[in-house]
Length: 141
Image 1 (cartoon, one colour):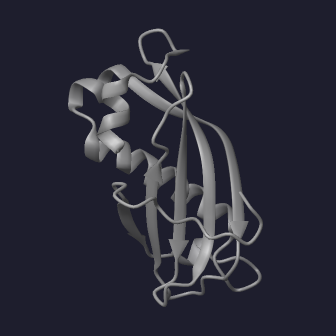
Image 2 (cartoon, helix red, strand yellow):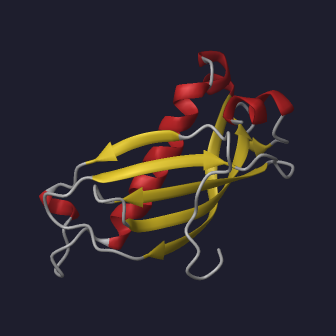
């Protein structure tokens, strides 16, 4: 990610949203949401997005595993503040790899964390990576 650049979905891209309410266990010794929690929320967003668009048969056949995460942190999310997550995916896949973009903002719209993450498509029966088929790209487009 370019330093300082905020992630925004391209015009017309489908965006999936979830709201997160931090629990007391999510708050670290500095009095704000721990950075590791944002990574968990990013995982939760990606999984929920897949489950929201993929037919049950596809979910039984395919799984996604994270290959890489790149995270920028900008504003601390404090106790009592909700995190508003948005995610969208790249318009193209590279073999079995698909880039996913995530923004978690505070209620005031300020970016708390943003993530560029690469996921790999796995065929559940074999546990092996498989090329992302065009119909799957269309599910997210």
